[in-house]
Structures are given as C-alpha cells and as structure tokens.
Image 1 (spheres, helix red, strand yellow):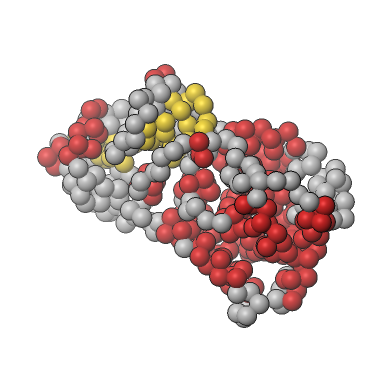
Image 2 (cartoon, rainbow, N blue to C red):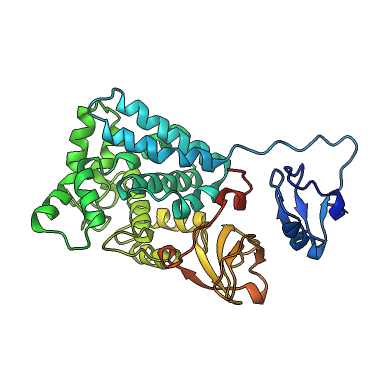
Length: 371
C-alpha cells in the first residue's frame, strides 16, 4: 500500500476520517470513521507523522462506517430483563428470544473483537441478565469459527440465552450472597436443567435442539455432570459448546462469592478441563477466537501503564492496546495507543477488572465507533 503524507493543518479535526490513518511505518493509527476532537490528541498522533493511502483518480470513495455493535449489544440487557420478567404474560417467548439471538449474530458479523470486548466491559447489569448474553456471544463466535450454518447457530443461541430459565430466582440470590449453597439450594440447582425444559415447553418452545441443549448444558464429557450423567457424544454439540462458554464467562465475572479471574487465568482453568469435562475442539476454538489477550481485558504494561486491549495485533502477544492509567497511577483523558511489540509497552500482567478502580470513557471509540 502506497501512502501519502497529510499535514496537521489538513487534518479534519472533529469530523469522521474519510479513510484509514497511518504513521510513517505503516502502522494503523485510526480507522475510517473515527474522529479526533482536540489539538492535543492531534499533536500526540503527529509524533511519527500522519499518512493516508494514496488515492487514484478513479478509486471509489471509502465506504461509510459500519453500524456500531455496541449500540446493538447495549440495548439487549433491557430486552432480556423484560423477556424473563414478563415471560408468563407476554406472548411469543420463542420469537422474542429469537430476535435477541439475531441481534447477537448481527453484532458479531460487524466486529468480532468489539463483541468479545463487550463481554468484559459491557454495561454493569444483574448477573442473571449479563451471564446468558455473554455466554450466547461466545457461543456465536465459536460456532461461526467452526462453520456452523446461521440457522443452526440460532437454536444454539436461543438455548444459551434461556439455559438458566429454570433457576432465575435462585441464581439471582446466589449471585448477591457470599455463602455456600445450602442442601436444599443444591438440589434446586441440579434440577434447573430439566425444570428449564418444563418452563420452555409451557412457553410453547418446540425446537428439540434448543430444548436438548438446555437439558444437557451441565452434563460433562466424563459423566460427572448433571442431571443424567451423560458422557461424550451422548451430549449434544450445542450443550457441549454452551458448557465451555458458560464456564468461561462465569470464571471471569465478579459475583458476591467470586471476585472473577483474569482472562488468561480463566483460559488455563478451562484448558485443564478440555478432553475431560469440556469438549477439546470447542475449548481450543474459544481460546483461538478470543486470543491470548482478549479484547476488553485490562493489562499492565512494562512501563507501569494500565491499558485495555482493543484488537488482536500482528502477533498473539502484541495486541493493540490503549492506555488509560499512567505509570503514576493517574487516569488520563486521552488514551494513547501502545504497540505491545515494543519492550517498553510489553504486557507484563493481565488484570482482574474489578481490581481496577477506573471507568473507561467513550469505550466504543476505542474500536472505531462513535457510540
């Protein structure tokens, strides 16, 4: 790709970029559609020069920015809250669940990295709402990678979204109480898969793939799961995939009795179960899709800065990150982009989100979206 220089005074300050912006080494600084709103931010970008692709006279204009996946996903917690809260009085539960599943598919089609990030930095909502959404997103990304047809993925997502419908009240109690399960609660917990099928059938769900996945999502390959101690291929592929995504998202999520693990620690935990309790191919694919440092996770750099991973980089250990806390522990207003391939900005540690006492501002912009 041939580049041409753009002077600072030519820069469209406060307006969407018509094309990608690079430095003199061809490193992407900003994507088409992103904006720079201040002269200070522009000065930071100008350190290594500003370059755009050289345009031929007959070259068509750049495509307009795609719809933001954050807009699509941010609307879903409210939709799912109503879906569960009014399921006994509002008609067509299956159709409304399907609409959520299709929205997840649309968001993942737009931007995989942004959807992975949403699992880590999405809205702070009740666990019973966030967890099925997170699980469904990861199921969609893994199933896409494995080549499942879109229609088959919809049954998978419907099941992931409703997997815990048989224990919503109990699950909410457990997510806010920091104490072990009581014997009666443990019995309820192990009954929720089959109870969920009963609830779904009362709501006129007839899709056997959906129902089987809900019934089996706590079964394990070695027969140690519940409720029927099924093993290996006796467990549907949808249930096996939901199990992997369910376990991973639970591990990285903070609850009253569980502070949440760092993204890489959770990978080690599910990898240790691959081929034993969890499906090997699906576990490996999840790790591949998310990357060594998943978008949305917080990392500490060699220079002491704390950054958020935005996208996969040129190598697995050098993702694209933006720093939001400087080496002195102070939050910054403009998030500088860091190349983790440089020794100064190498990733030294993956952090637990709940341990970082700063809220990211304008998160969608880090992935190239206005909102």
